[in-house]
Structures are given as structure tokens and as C-alpha cells.
Image (cartoon, rainbow, N blue to C red; front, side, top):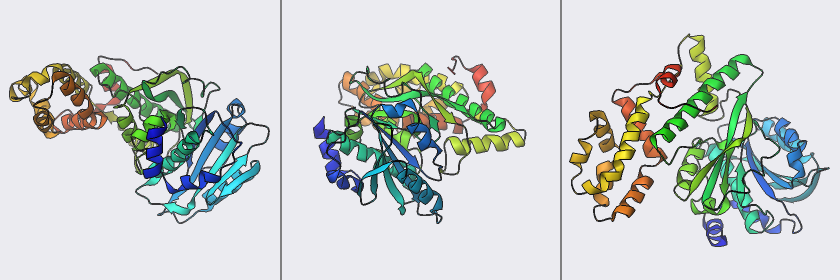
Length: 402
């Protein structure tokens, strides 16, 4: 395990990791949780350390950050001060501060990335990467015993068994997604969030129905991943959005992604301008549509029927590797066009001399979560336009779990 981690930390880790060389020798933790914070109140820190989870020897890494485009650092400064005074300062090095939290065996590692802001294009992806790189370093130094890196956000409430759920997962699992539900005291926001949540569940259920190996949720606040696998895929991509999608897409090529159905995280339903797309902006859009008395539209369920047909037919694709057109001609015209547009011919050409087992394996790697999304978007561009989500759910030959 340490070979992959050693290589990653030597070549790809963020600069903050070097400051951990003087981390207090005696400090040991069972689990590590990474949460980025931008324009957040102190409530989520208080909530965690007053919960039973804080009695489980957890290192909570909070990366307080802001983008270069943000000129007002007051909210971040205020949060840092409150975190600093949560307990007793045990250690400080450069922009890292370790606070021992009273009446718990846990601690808070505060990372200041607002005094030196993050490049706007790197956004939350870099914030998560800094936190996870620090966690990985401490795993390597044996300050943390678990192999799992837990990733979440400030709007999440965790159940008491959060850190216990992954104990029985075998090494074939490289990542895990926890179940989730949105809640809010604001009825309009809660309803908009529930509609978006239905869309998320519908998409994953559609992928599962089609037989895609990439049928999992890509939500940054509900993830955990194997530390060795995290190192192998070079960590979170430095992106202002979709960092969770691209990380999981890589991890899924190394092994399985577990869905922890019996452990449900409660996410505060809210609008947000912190990221360019994702849950917050989607909820804003739904609220606007509702004000205009317009339906929220999403993918037609037919896209998943076409995806299913392609994935089933892919079992015979190797036989047509030297003459692809007869295989393509078996498909609907728009499916054929989209497959060519996303590069199927180029893929097959490169695999002409591959044995069947290797060919099929490479196809699964090539037709990944990103290519799947491009395929679905291509079908939409060629006539399978979005329809009202309620209608899509009624039309689908699969059901979604709530």
C-alpha cells in the first residue's frame, strides 16, 4: 500500500503536506473526515463535535478557503477564529493549526486557504485535494488507522454509525457512496431539492437498469475512498465543480464503488452560489422555473433504453473490430451517429489486435461515466430532448429508490 502513497506524496501532493513533518508524535486517530468551508457558519463544526461521532477518535480536517475572485475574507476569518477557540491549540505550522477539542478524543485540523486564496478555476476541487492530501500523509505516518478517506460538506448531518459502515468492505471496493436525503424548514427550497434529488436517483437508476458499471452517485458530500486508490488516481482534480464526478470515474476503473444504503446522510437543502453547477445552482433553477410555472425537465427515459442496447451489443463488438459498420447498422440511426461522434471507431481501430477479454475490458474503461454522459447528451442533441421529470419517471421501465 505505501508504495503508491509514497509515490503520490512525493510527486503530486499539495505543499501543505510538508508541514506535517513536525505533527505531534503521540496523536493517533481512528478516522479522518475532510470538509471544505467557504462562506460557512461555525454551526457544522459545533454540530459534529457535540455528536457521538466525536467520541470515536476522529481527525476533522476543515479547509477554510475562498477563491481569488472573492475580496471579502471576513466570513472565513470569523470561522477560523471560532475553530481556533473550540479547544486547546496543540500544534501550529504555517497555515495549519491542530486544535484538541475538549471532552472528546477527537481533534480539528484547521487549514487556512483564505489568507492565500485559491485560484477560482481550481475552487472546491483544490480545497478537497488539500484536505485529502493531508489526511493521506497522516495515514502514511500512521497517525490515522483507517484506510478510508471520508469526504463531506458543511451542510451534512451524519448518523452515529457513519464511520462503522465501511469496516466490512473488502479490498475490491475502492470507493463508497452513502445514502442521502435533503431537508429544509423552507418548504419551497425543500420541495425543489426533493425534485432535484429525484432526478439524481432517476439518473443512477437508469444507468443501473442499462447495466452500466458507472451507476453511482457523484456527490462530494457523501463519499469515502480507499487511501491507496486515491493515491493511484492522483487525488481530487483541481476543478471548481465536478471534482467528485471525475475522481469517482477514475476510482471505478480500479475496483467497485459501494452504495451504503442503510447509512443515510441528512443534507440541508439550500441554494448556493459557491459552485457554477451542482445541487445549489440546480435548486435555484428549479425555484425559478416554479415561479414561472414551468416544469423541471430531465433526460427522456429512452436514453437509458438505447444505452442498455449498446452495452448489451458491446458483448459482440470484438467480432466486428475489423469491420465496424455491420455492428453499427444494427442500431438506431441516432445511436449510430452518437457512437461515431464520441469516438467509437477510433477506439475499435486501436484495439484491432486485442484478444477478446482484453478488448472487452478496455471497452468498459473507455465507455466510462464521462463517455456515458456524452452519449446521453448526444442522443438529446439528436432529438431525444428532455421532458418533464414527472413524465420521465412515469415512462421509465425502472423505479427509483427514495
